[in-house]
Image 1 (cartoon, rainbow, N blue to C red):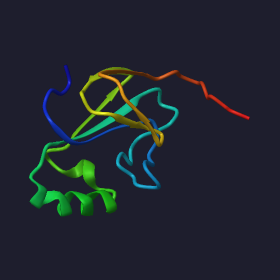
Image 2 (cartoon, rainbow, N blue to C red):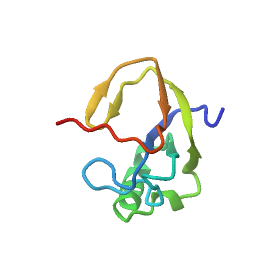
Image 3 (cartoon, helix red, strand yellow):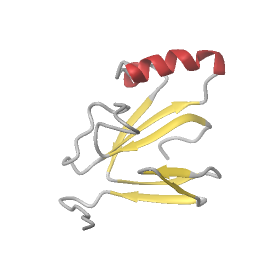
Length: 107
């Protein structure tokens, strides 16, 4: 188990950009075969502006309380919905797997 606690932000990145151009995980590489997990544990609302500032400065991963791990696959169990490339997904369990050297193309 990599992480077991409440979170403020949890992002699983295969590339550097997220949600309209934010760089939550600036070291992510789309072709390395890994998912970069960026987890900000639950923080007090009073500190939210600080973390928003760090996200805007592309510097969230430098915060000592932020957890960053690289994995080939992971299972997430949560009662919360997930945003997957702009689509809301509702499930209790999510299984993320990297498919190396693949690209889904819809024409």
